[in-house]
Length: 229
Image 1 (tube, rainbow, N blue to C red):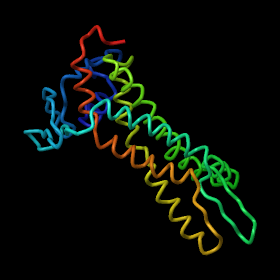
Image 2 (image 1 turned 90 degrees about the horizontal axis):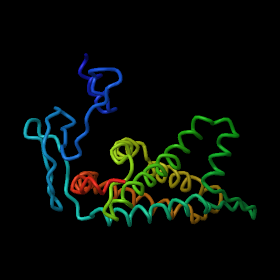
Image 3 (image 1 turned 60 degrees about the vertical axis):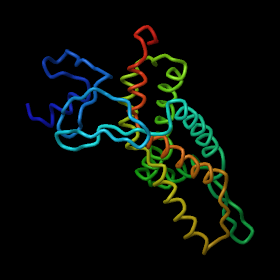
Image 4 (image 1 turned 180 degrees about the vertical axis):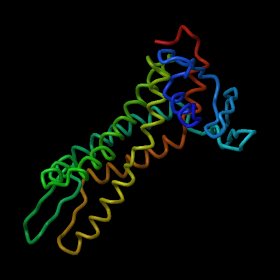
């Protein structure tokens, strides 16, 4: 079997030895994404990095923010996400005529104007994927903070690792700021609660993602088998 397809099937959880046989999963081990070398997962202090001795790729990095700190960031992210979607993104004042819109209203208007691909991309990257990232982190972190492993922990961690790649709140924020600057020459522009909330959300998600998943795997692996829910 081609090595690319073999690695893809392995990441999806299939061993390749039979169409109905599931591959074994060992949270205490870490596999290099570049050369597939296998190592025991080790605790890493803040600022430390573990690199593959074969190819030099990064296996994991230590961070000052532990699982409890990541949980606090995830809760704060959820609050900012809700505020960002309930509050107005921007208010335009053109000769006394004021118009404001929330993010959902702006996406709905884009869809109604026939720009459906843009609306879908905006909805996925600014609403769908960030919400999935937040919910998956809460799903994993709340039980860990209570000394237990979440149900379907391994599947949730795999999904979190994949979804993080598609959460592009910072791209949405940058695009919105550019649109605000360009609109300032035509009308009075007042940034609303939504844009400030998304700015805070961008920072929170970036810090949480920088903390990585290495520490969460390590903490879950240290729990006794009876702690799994």
